[in-house]
Length: 144
Image 1 (cartoon, rainbow, N blue to C red):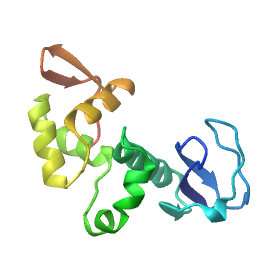
Image 2: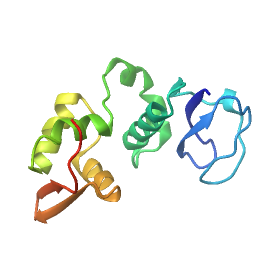
Image 3: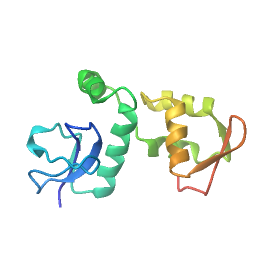
């Protein structure tokens, strides 16, 4: 099965669709769209990789909107953009870390997101908690 990561033209949500479906419906707003008319951020047979790319694109887009990503597509392709999982993998060796550690790792991996977005995404996934103000710990151990 072939998976494609695209953005819904109606609600601008990033999602994974099956390539065999020419006119899928958006999982967020329900509106159908032509798959061939959308820019594919990923196309391949690995569903896990498609989900990682979708998360990376959604993290990259953040509050700026997909238009900002489209405008800077040429620059983005020249720059290595790591996924949230790359940041997690790098920080998972630490028992405790700060937002500054996240910022340093984002800079090292050349991720265009902010530490606040990464921390918020990890909180939503229940992967970390804040035992003291500005100090974060993992909820469970992660494979590096």
